Picture 1 (cartoon, rainbow, N blue to C red):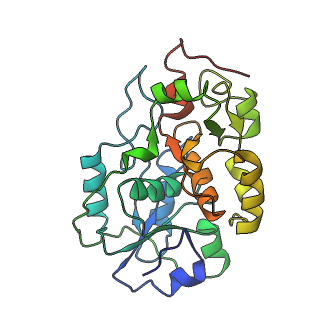
Picture 2 (picture 1 turned 45 degrees about the horizontal axis):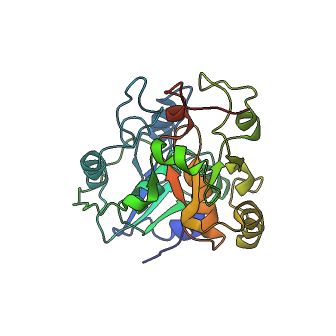
Length: 282
């Protein structure tokens, strides 16, 4: 059983007929929430089941309270993972078409949050699979359901109240995984208030990737993140993004760099700005 953070297309191809491996296609586009499902039904990795970021991997949005992709209730995501054929015995490999930065990262992180560490991203995602000429097929796929038993690791999640305290505490570090221009408050096209949480430093997830969408080497990532988080215990490092999805990319990258597992502000910036009393910095 593999227990890696990343799985290559070649390795995944050798396990397509393995009932103890579950492949989750989670392609998603913010501007067109059903495009990922259409793309999946048009062509996907054989055996892959589909998980929708809004419908399967997020909770309901409460206006003025939550961010754009709230954390799902434990019982709800337990039912989703059970339906996808995941139990404690399987290796899960998730992929999307943006280097794992959207819903694939969330699949990986949700599984780890619920105690299932045999989860990985397909390194390079859908593009890596297609570029190597590996088999694809269309339609929908269903796996035999299994019983997923969650074991929540509550220490991995940070609330907005905790962030309010942490941003003023020099013992903690906030990492903003969005693009540098969104961090600076420039060209904001998604959230109604531009800027970042005061005290946070910019750590764009795109800088974790090579031009082909695969992750940079362990050594390269270690150099990057040691510079960013030097002097902070890893459990005092908290990543956030726009809605708690792409921040998981930074968390995986730090683990790949050998620094340990940072924490997630799951509500992220879109939740932070729901309260006008919370400060924003540009």
